Image 1 (spheres, rainbow, N blue to C red):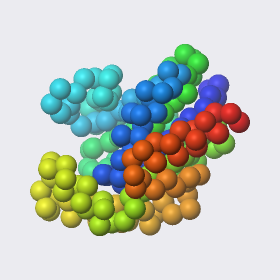
Image 2 (spheres, rainbow, N blue to C red):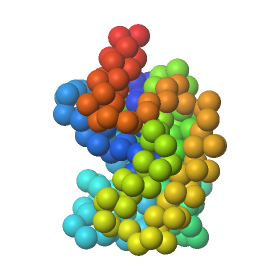
Image 3 (cartoon, rainbow, N blue to C red):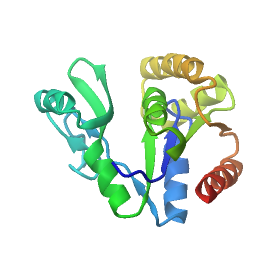
Image 4 (tube, rainbow, N blue to C red):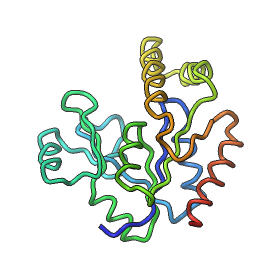
Length: 190
């Protein structure tokens, strides 16, 4: 696979990673979001090939056996998520920089796979209290779901410590955008 550049954004749920990624995609027409594959069913208005590549669990296992993934994970029984090598090659063939918006473990695995061709950025909340407040402010999760997300965030941050090229604290969004732009511009200039 001919290698281009890769930018990986990871964060616990609610830390602001998708907001930062959308901001950067708006500034860089050469960036292209990598669409992940999943074995879960589409939700709401999700579209195949846009939000995810929806692949049933049996076919997902076949693709794993065919070494079709850069990385994948079985998050729950028969619930797979992964990055197809064909998607990576398609983006690089267009001369674009791949942007990933993935969970912490996925970001770590992608960095290991792509090495120096990748910039890995871990977006972290200023504190767990702030993260809890943001998750409650969304109004989309029950108290139980928020507690689960916070517990997962704590273990993800512990796992990720020292494993990413940059840790970006998302305190004030404008400052986070400015720091993200600077980090990305320095990586692209290399």
